[in-house]
Length: 288
Image 1 (cartoon, helix red, strand yellow):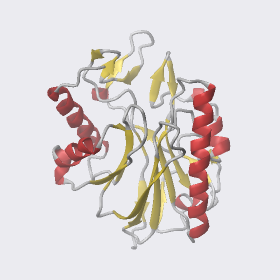
Image 2 (tube, rainbow, N blue to C red; image 1 turned 60 degrees about the horizontal axis):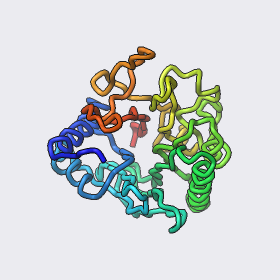
Image 3 (cartoon, rainbow, N blue to C red; image 1 turned 180 degrees about the horizontal axis):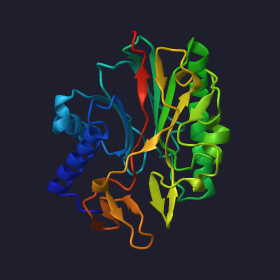
Image 4 (cartoon, helix red, strand yellow; image 1 turned 135 degrees about the horizontal axis):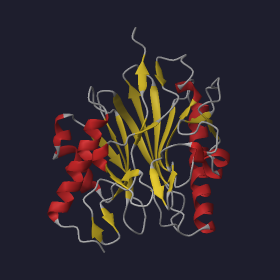
């Protein structure tokens, strides 16, 4: 196990808060999905004992059965996203993996937004992990469909680490997420803001670098109602990877600027994460 001393913990928390604050220098980020959160104490430190405390973030976190004790969390600004309810979606008590977190809230326009925070199983166990990712997403899709059937204009936001690329089977077939370049957007369908419809390999950068290649494991998926411009809230139809130099390092083999990890195996590197963050922009109509 890696040696997590107090100074390393403080450094990690400070670095994460710096990423969040630097992502938008004009106004605070409204919604933040965090993966691999160990416990509630980590979220308390992040929101209350860093520079983020002056912003006033609140959060929801799962209490999953994951064997490593890691969870997913959603940070939000209560001024722009007023929480209504939250729910942990658990696939099975026999599977020691992360729950999916669903949080419903009211936006400043009065619209209801349903947010799903996801961290699917990794690919380490091959076909078994692939089946588990598919089963978890199928469970989540059933929940999404039930929300869509209840809402007049369903505004759905799914984000997190899928451990699959946008064009893989789980996001496309199981979740039925279409490319963001589909042209016209239908209210009741889902669209992947990290996939333009071409093979992923055509992208210059992703959120995760492995064996000399980029992957886009971290994705943002929204309902068409958030894209078609007919409502008081609208999102831009493409997500972006946030990769400033200070959270990066140069890969010796390829020369690429890749995420600087906190640890590489047992060796402490002092970086922020092995993933780059991904973000999208949301707008409210000015006349409201």
